[in-house]
Image (cartoon, rainbow, N blue to C red):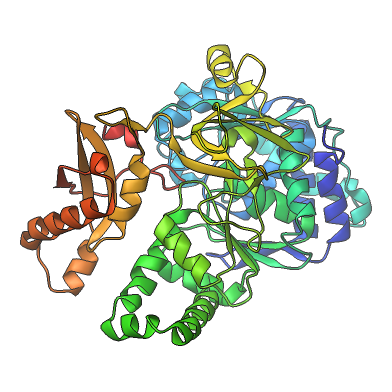
Amino acid sequence: MIKENFVELYIKSFKANWDLPALTDYSEQKTLCYKDLATEIARLHIFFKKAGVERGDKIALIGKNNTLWCSVYLATVSYGAVIVPILQDFHPDNVHHIVFHSESKLLFTSDAIWENLDECQMSQVRGVFSLTNFRCLHQQSGEDFVSILKGLDKEMESRYPGGYTPDDVEYAKVDNSELVLLNYTSGTTGFSKGVMLTANNLAGNVTYAHDLNLLRRGQRMVSFLPLAHAYGCAFDFLYAMTEGVHTVLLGKTPSPKILSQAFAEYKPNLIVTVPLVIEKIYKKVILPQLEKPTMKVALSVPIINQKIYAKINQKLKEALGGELHEVIIGGAAFNHEVEAFLHKIKFPFTVGYGMTECAPLISYDHNYDFIPTSCGQVLKGIMEVRVDSPDPQNILGEIQVRGENVMKGYYKNEEATKLAFTEDGWLRTGDLGTVDENNRIFLRGRSKTMILGPSGQNIFPEEIEARLNNMPYVMESLIVNRDNRLVALVYPDYEAMDNDGLSSGDLSEIMETNKVNLNKMISSYENISTIHVYPNEFEKTPKKSIKRYLYV
């Protein structure tokens, strides 16, 4: 069990960082200091009490990242209830299922999402509230949440006549063994399961990040990953709020233009991101420069190329705000070509590894310890790893883990829980890889996506896709097995084609050239037989991983 109590981490932080900025809604330019966040939590605790919310009750939460979303999350877990964050990209039918399946008593939602929901399909929900201003959107017959909300200001004045102060910050005694979070997965296989996470699971992630000294009091982050997902939530929010950090919530689609503006304005010290964001920067900004004839000549001269790499490194840092000390990349496989280039120019990045079932962190290295193609060392003192292989350092096998961050199981799903663990209690990650003598994990791909070659070879489609995605006019791709032949589905980069004066009539020749060049770079048993142009972007999870099951 983790020594630090999860809820008490926030009591200490609010008291120590009372006057510092905590959260900013970027789109509204509205900032809450730690004292404002603590006060909002106190108001919600009064509301929960008067509304008859009991310890262990489930409270569902869905909407874009904003300060009210964060207030509801922290108020729920510090009250002793269980938060059920739902990704805002989920289809209404999936939202209905999760709210009903989780037995949530209250629902906090954005107004736009509420318009597409049907309260009749969530019959156990007693009340629904807006994440715009906390007004009551719906209440069951016999409930009077409207009156309770109207009386909150008077109640706060009565309880705290001198104003809410650091000495007033007191929360429920929540043992680290208690369930505090139901996180419904959104994987690439199409199944959504409620991951049961305890205060100990969250404390394991938060305290490890603290020990790593990822951030210091008063530093800044720009958060653009969905907080309803374990990855962004753990570091952009939960860890940051225990450290006295200022987190800027983007709250909108992270387009290159918007991200650039936010980075320039707030100058983040740490950036937590998925591979897609960095890969786009590489392909759109860096790669075109590297492919210029004059640049290729310059890079062939050892002394000159180091100066060029140093300049690219500096410009990339400046584009990300100019004050960052590290970029953490996780959530999906990282393109090895992009990774190798960033390492060559000495850019301060690292690749971590985790999963929702571990809340989420399993392995991590600081950027100065990072070894390309790895995803860090298993968290010392927190997690253990083994490989289901006769030779874990050289022969691929399933990565299996156990430790403080591992979930209790899947909510109301004993069969899925049983399948997720080995008989001796190790969590099956479903990822294939090896582990070196320093407990550093090297992943190759998912066991479910691996394709068996004609002579029994293991083919990892993600590795082929990574190469194809860096080829001319390829925005994204999928490698699938059709009648024992490998076929590439490609969504073209139409914007780049337009800029270069090319039309859709040129696609056939372009893709044929790409196919020939790709097959020269990979083993013969990995060769693709044809490229099919796909008309639309592939549907993705909130982590920006393609939902493969839709296209296989």
